[in-house]
Image (cartoon, rainbow, N blue to C red; front, side, top):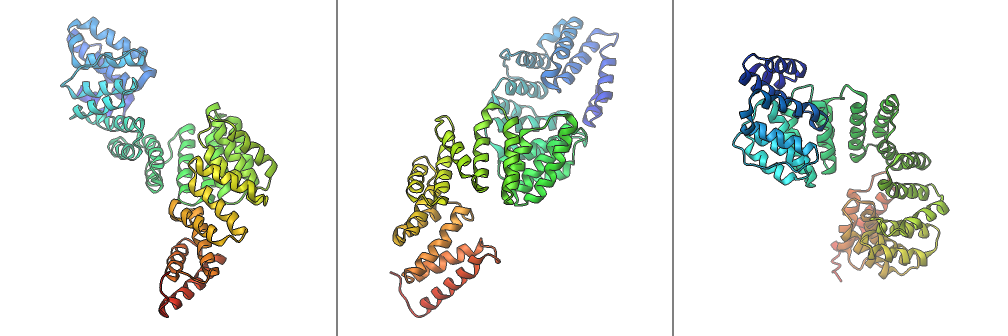
Amino acid sequence: MDRAERFLAEGRYQEAFGELVRRAQAPLPKDAARAALRLAEFYALYGEAELENLEAALAQVLELDPGSREDPLFRALSALAAAFRGEPPTPFAPEDPRAAYHLAQAALFAGEPEQAIALLEAARPLPAFLAWRAADLRAKSLEDLGKSREAFEAYQEAFFKAPAEDRPYLALDAAAAALDAGLPEEAKALLAAGGPPPDPDAEASWHYLTARAELALGNPRRALDLLAEAERREAELGEPSYGVALLKGQAAMELGRFAEAQEAFSEALSRAPEEERNYLRHELAVALLEAGKSDEAERTLKALFADPAYPHRGAVAADLAELYYRLADLEAARAWGREAIRLGQAAAGELFLAHVAYDRMQLEEALAHYRRVAELAPEGSREWLVAQQTAVEILAQLGYPDPAEVLERARLALRHTPPADDWAGTLRLYAERAEELLRDGRTLN
């Protein structure tokens, strides 16, 4: 068996299979049964797709040696076969690490990721060909529990333990977990280390995930180049995906290419599963709004808001507040801003209440709203930056009642304002004036 396991550890799966088949035909029944059991384990590595072969190999084991029924590995593989059939696997506490690993497979397939993780703790030490698979199985279990960062770390472990042939595929899973955990740099690095997989479907996924990482890192042009490659691979397969079209639309939005974004979102909508369509309609509505197609955007947003099952109604309300603000319908903008706050989108809602008050020259009220936005929104976000910039301007208009606040907000905003932006020069002037007042002994109000 050592020869077969060496082949497995090296990723030479066809040679390992041939060795196991040959040994399962040994003249001594007990030797043949042991080989047949390892052949069953080989089939188990390929999951539910090999259920028929897994069951046939287990039946061969019992035919050759009925006493194998009590072997922990046989019991674990039988439990896994049961899970693949949709039956609850029979649990037990194996001392054999290999049996514990396959029971963990069964637990995860049966929808019990916590049990799978507990079993993997007992699955040590394992032969090399199972050690990386155990890390991969742990990563999948952690993903099912919503623990994306821990899942990424487990996928990394699997990646570096696996044979070279398997690494490109592990990198795809690892990158998806990293992106879900907000780690685009790490996702990009591992995808580069794994390289594009050799088959078109997986290669399309590699380009798509790399594009996701680039977009998250603020490189929408690079993302679009990668998405063009993903589209080419999908065209070879005749299977265009909604995910690629969706990301293409998001990258185009970042670049201000709103007509292109609208077209991409429409493509994504035509391909998306039913449960994703409202989300895509929302993306499309924002593209329509940015493209100046207010009537279409309004109809789509109001239809989404009318659906009580849509989970992002607060964001829809904020988008409607923006739409009506752009149309100079300040009462409607204020009403939808309040609705956004009520539905949990406080920063976005407060921003439009601030804009409305500022347009009406209600400076103290506007300043209070902008201050709240700056507290609620993440530093560097669009809402936060607009709030900081406008709060500085209002404080200046009010005669610098608190120069220290002007200076602090101006400095914070300058960290996130591009030097070429008109706001950069304005903020520096306000900051210089606030410093002068502070040097002259102006006290805080």
